[in-house]
Length: 168
Ligand code: FEO
Image (cartoon, rainbow, N blue to C red):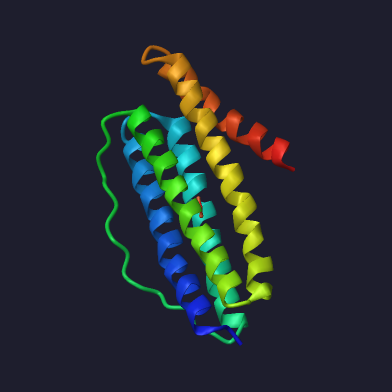
């Protein structure tokens, strides 16, 4: 049976992962409607991943005797000033999610819920990978400047695949 405090932070994270998914969907739509096909594909794929994260939290809470809550989600911003703006926001958001995951780890330890502590480690690792992947995109964007966005847009999915392969 899930400890109440642990259940609360896990349920809170369901809404955060759902927001993450919608945030990346909104960014994907922005890219899609601005002729940035590769970037929109990357963001659509990222939105799917966030939905899977949300599902993991829902299933875990239910399996451990708690009850997942599906709440209203705040509307994400629809407009961005450019690609650099989008990826700066993605990085900032992922850093925020890492803090949230760390808070869950802390609550698990305080409540001596070592089962959930063990389970949440998957997300600890996932956040290291997500931050590294988005950081490398931001580094690349700094290098290409504003002139080679066409090439960047073409290459971004390949970057995603090579990150995934090196994480295996
Ligand atoms: Fe669900 Fe991108 O963290």
